[in-house]
Length: 330
Image (tube, rainbow, N blue to C red; front, side, top):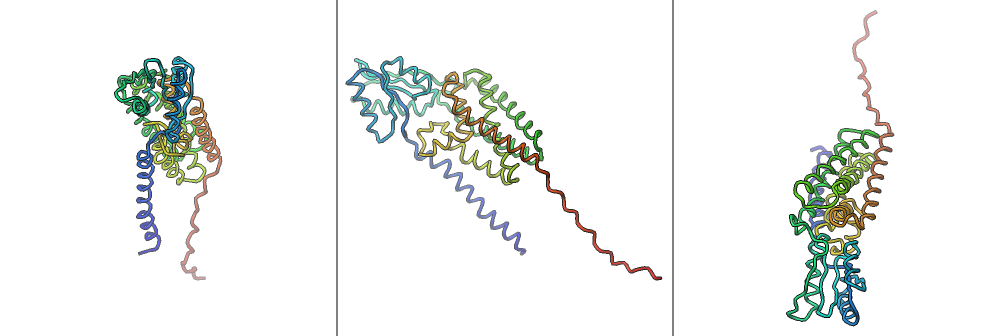
């Protein structure tokens, strides 16, 4: 058997299990290590009750990052601004819990369990959901599941641009056009039809489209700079790393360090955070995610335009075979 087919056989046998192992690690490891790590929460109320509660939360081995507020109204405002995920208000009647299930149902449940465990046995903890998840998706399942299709759409767009050999301005136009249409269609499905996101319609469409543009631009840009292998690298980065590291199904602060931070630097994580902000919090705390997505999109489009200026390699024309016809007789 020739050497080249042997090498290809070995490459396939080793590469596929390696990709499977990467996928299992990327998806399973963060899920298996879910726990609060410097999760921002608030404590409101007068001393000494509020002081004692703050000390109890801070003694949980770095699980919570406690922010102190002077009143329940201030804590509520902080939740609406996405400065904290929830807050405990100390009142003469006992502690009250403020949550935001729209910010992450898993976090709201975690806070309820933590406050209940700290209260005397048998104490009922009143709970107020300051920013509630929509009744059509109370567990946030649809929003959590929406990032993977967006990542696939972005990778598919970048791959199509590469395979169809669109270059320069045409490639950039294709990326922008697809991202715009996907944003509009996705907003129509999730907001107008299913009603699982409830914010400003055009802001939601913009967040969805910008996410697809950032991912598609990154894939196409890598391919324009380093060749077709860039598609594979981009797909691995966005789908097998960016999606499970996004924290959209729970919260970035519930993932192992530094997974949560890395995930927010990648388009899937930034896109999930931006969509949650515009869908339920009137766009509050969306600035960082917008900048992250904009930088990825700009870098990808720039790479596509730079790659389009390169002249494609000229095809090699084989030299004609020498003629062996006998010379004519004199």
